[in-house]
Image (tube, rainbow, N blue to C red; front, top):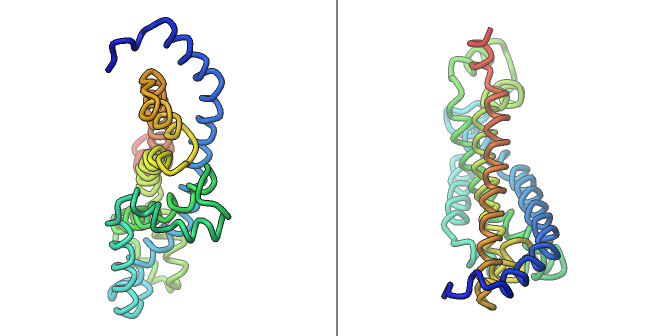
Length: 237
């Protein structure tokens, strides 16, 4: 399998592919990952807020049937494997983008796969907020929306950022898998060259770059989470 991995001819061919195709592939991977994460947060964060604030004892109680529907939908979407989900949403992808193949088309299934995950992560973060702070805001006459926007979300920012980092690294992994159905980026290169053409050097290089991107996103997210943690700032003072 790897007998001619370091063959000079193979090395030259791999180097040429890395120089010519990898820069665009890296850009496509980052573009898809960041954009999908942003769209997923726009959908998932409000859902996470509703899962906490809409409970019977929450700051903005919602009908029990509606909460049950939200939980069922989120759980159903989270339970579908990503490869199957990509195929299931082909009609929606074609409706929104006009095609089911390509870098931009892969954003639709990525968002659908990610927003339930982000909703659960946001729910976990918001549940960590000290209930005494919420009760104090209620006693001062704050409205439910004021409590959500000025108390719950600001107090959970470090945890939200930490969970957003987990989400973006997960979406990065999903974006690599989208190469199977024609999505762009490093995943497509790894599959096209490593799986279909047995050029394992290209596959290894793509995997290494994906690992490096995960490290970059993880380090950046951890840094932002630490910088936004008020408890650490109080200790420093």
